[in-house]
Image (cartoon, rainbow, N blue to C red; front, side, top):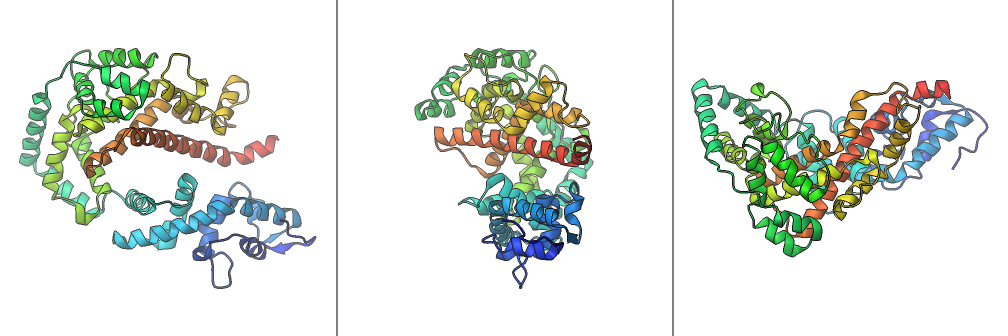
Length: 437
């Protein structure tokens, strides 16, 4: 579709005419059928048209070429805008259910709805839960009341000392079992329900996690993982040294961001994010639950979830999308997961850039390149957070297909997050690219 006019036109009229051709966006529209002012301000201009990089398309009056470009950009995003409207409806409903009143609902939820539409497409059966989780993440860690209660609870010096002593007692009470990777290897190779039941019913996950606490634990885990994956094991961000240190009670005492050495306070804050107020136990019980969870293998209380994380650890070394296809001998599931990311357009662009003289962006971003090279670490971090949420709610995968879907979904989510970072870097530097093109 084009504007069909050889004269300059008001930008608002160009937007309104294009908007008429996008179905299902009534909740984002004004009474006259055009986009709401906040829709333009919060979605269209910053996210669809990206006027920060295309300032010529943000002018009040557009020449014919600019009007045509604006129209085409808007209509090219029609499916995502329709999904955005549907997600906004879910977000409004969940916002009421969670009793969230902070901020204007459109200011807060319009960009979030577009983000959900980008990541998930049209809302599916799980949309209410996804919308609620997104809102809890956006509005902080479970609400100010829960965080304030936790802060106050841990602020008592005597109580804090008692809790720290209890943490150490539970940590050292767990005895490491001999590592037996037979069940884990069988599931990685077969992915069958029978193999999954054997792995889920075993102590494999906890044993591998607890073994990390012994001297030389990291080396022993690397050897076990390499035996299954056939690949050398990079730094996976699990712990700082060769053995897992006892996590601190308070967040202020953390020495790094390693997964298995996160403080009890940080983990309880994550619990507060995940549970609505009417489903939370008292703060003292939440802290006690987390003390038990921290003491378990891989910091996950349910053995089945520890087995899921052990699976992720085995698959992680193959997730090196910047290196292209995984080598022969790597388990097929790991090869498929890596291929899923390696064929992403932003990964192909990065590989071409790194192989030649053209930088990834006009001013190469070291952090961005590090994230791309450390995909395995990013994946494991996201998987652990997801499994911790399952542990908090008592959820378990039902069968092998659930486990495959869980891992595949986390890989996709990690890839989408990195794709967004690359896109933002490129858009921010678009004027520099246009200047030299």
